[in-house]
Image 1: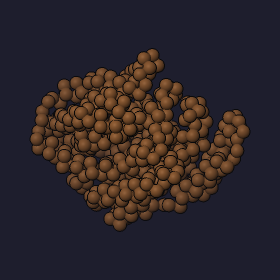
Image 2: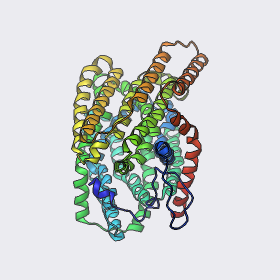
Image 3: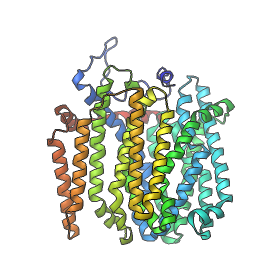
Image 4: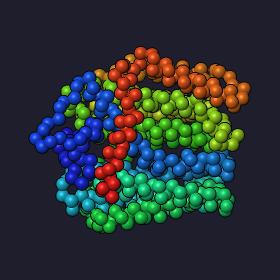
Amino acid sequence: MVAEARDLQPVTNPYAAEDPLLPDELPLPPGTSPAPPAPEELAPIRLQALGGYATLFAALTLLSKGVSFFMLPLYVRYLSPAEYGVIELIENSLDVLQIVAGSRLLGGVFRFYYKTDDQTMRRRVVSTAMLTIYAGYVCAALVAYILAPQFARYVIGDIKYTGLARLAAVNLSVVALYFVPPVFLRLTGRFTLLVRMNLIRLPLQVAMNVLFLVHFHLGPAAIFLSTLICNIVVGGVMTFMVFREVGFGYDKQVAKDLYRYGAPLIVTQFATFILTYGDRPFLRVVTNLTSVGLYTMAYSFAFLLAYLAQTPFDLVWEPKKFEIAKRADRDSIYARVFVYQNVTLLTLAVGMSLFVHGVLRIMATPPFYPAANVVPILLIAMIFQAWTASQDVGIGVSEQTKYIAIANWISAGVVLAGYALLIPRYAGWGAAIATAIAYGVRYGCTYAFSQRLWPIRYNWTPVLRLAALSVVTVVVSVLVPAHSPVAALAARVTEFAVFLALMWWLPILSASDKRALLTLPATISASVRARLRPAVRAT
């Protein structure tokens, strides 16, 4: 499948003729070939252009994912930790139904869209996928609505939340309106339009949250009601735009292909869900809803690391790592990119660990302050997750994706055992430690399978040195007492400055790495502007 995909050339994507790991250059005269880059400059140049793409997608990710985080001060003043825990339990449970409804079928849209050059067939792929997924979500929502009383009784633990569960089920029926159409916009390169729709949704979501939460005092229902309105308004507009362009064609064979392609991903997603969200039900049964709310708050900070560092990187790296596999210098590129990825990843993780206490004191109320204690442990899990996503190249190139499912289910078994052993004794701390261990097991399995199938020589020395420096910095911050908020801020700023200085002066980065990092901001800015120009023309 990977080999076949390499030969396909999409014709509607304005970036199809570009290599996103190459820098922008002026057009060459006809018949002139570009000069080959110097071998020693190959990886840094490609990383700079990669950073430009990742920065663009980071903006999109922050726009689509950032509403809940930026509304955090409002949530914690009008929602109790127990209500916060109820919202989390409902959303996590509906995430399971989304897996069954067909959220993972979207991965097949890219595959079958690019499999053909026939524009009619491409439109049929998109319309079939949209109709199939929409129908799946309506069916899943109907089941959730009917079973709402049982869900409230056995999952949340109180029948009074039946109405809230039904409201969430109604929202589930329309949520696909918002997240499915952007796939077509990405396929056709209309990124500025995607940004525009997110910019419309953001103030609408804020306004609805304020109206229902502050003015009408609807409590947890305010969150689901405002999301429902945003999905209908913004998602409805995008759905209309896409269907107007692709039509309402439906192809049974395309639907079968989408399910055939997505079935293994669905199986894997259940294990991933257990890894990510399985600790909340354990906490609810063993402790109380307040513990669930505090742990959810801690996880929101850990997810922020993924939103800022991993997701933008993966959006660019996922397709390009297969193209690099054909190059003779692939090992040096993989190794260099992994080092640079960890510079960003670990620097952000250290910064979040140092300042999370202060941020929570500004954004939240005192009952939420203890959530900061477990954030560093959860950040370790997010780092393992990022490593897993970037170092599964061998599995993908060899097309042995069953090993991804095996690694995920092994780690799911480990995390369930960890929950049973640690949560009863240590509550949120136990959940965080079990999560970090399980993510580490998944990474270890994935790395071992990938290296056995298609070995890559990574340069682990600078990564391990940087990881050790990160751990020491965070441990020192825990051991250094602070008797006032001002003293705490001064200590954290000093510790972070020392971390950055040591990262620069210790034998972690090579001289070429440092030169590349110094020029990275200017290169990223130029690359983003270049990538936005064709998107503007496409809209």
